[in-house]
Amino acid sequence: MKVLFIGDIVGKPGRAGLERAMPELRERHAPDLVVANGENAAGGLGITQKTAKEIYAAGVDVITTGNHVYRHRDAYEFLDREERIVRPANYMTGNPGRGSTVVEAAGRRVGVINLSGTVELRAARSPFPEAETLLDRLARDADVFIVDFHAETTSEKIAMGWHLDGRVAAVLGTHTHVPTADARVLPKGTATICDVGMTGSRDSVLGVRWEEALEGFRTQLPVRFTTAEGNIWINAVLVDVRDDGLADSIEQILLPAPD
Ligand SMILES: [Fe+2]
Ligand SMILES: [Fe+2]
Image 1 (cartoon, rainbow, N blue to C red):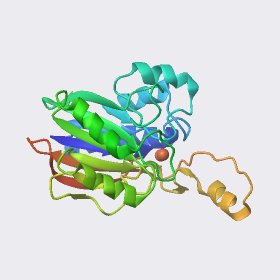
Image 2 (cartoon, helix red, strand yellow):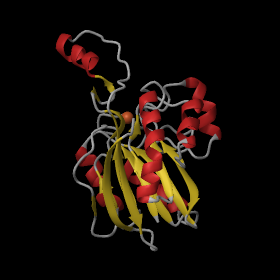
Image 3 (cartoon, rainbow, N blue to C red):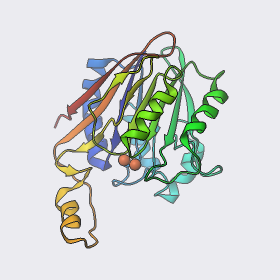
């Protein structure tokens, strides 16, 4: 089974670029399941029902999120209702949305789990025991597990890979928007990468117009950030999952979106 995981989709340019790139990605990689991080989908920060629907329409099966998930209050009801979108499981119990979901793909039950790191990010509980609790709870509901670990530091992300090695098909890092060059399958069969990257403008600073981001650093004055539009790239990984639910391979995909 092939799982295509797409890094943080940033704003309308990211959504439109993904839509244009999906036919080629499908033809080239024939994924059985497509998961995408959508925490920056709506105007660069957060997600709404409208932007989520656009992402589903582009061919994404499950949307994961992260620290910007609660940016738009009017999406809370949607997060509660829609089963194919997840937010970090280790956020406050009772907050809108769910931390995991199970979907069918290629005749398998795939559990998609979202967790947040706690270094430089706020979460209610440590993601490490949270992951174990979730895997215990979902053991009878799913055959394959994919984890989006939304975290800031490479150390915390690598540690999570080792923590879950042999128990999940993949621990895929998101949040920093920059793809790392460490994609590999750990000894017990878990595919990892510190960061998948983003789907958005490469002529930017993490999806923000570079002139504005630079102005902020240069002047140390407040600057209004807007989403950059030029040179859209898709940052993704393709994980090949074996019959035993662990990974055979992980391949990085860095693809300019067609115009
Ligand atoms: Fe992000
Ligand atoms: Fe984030």
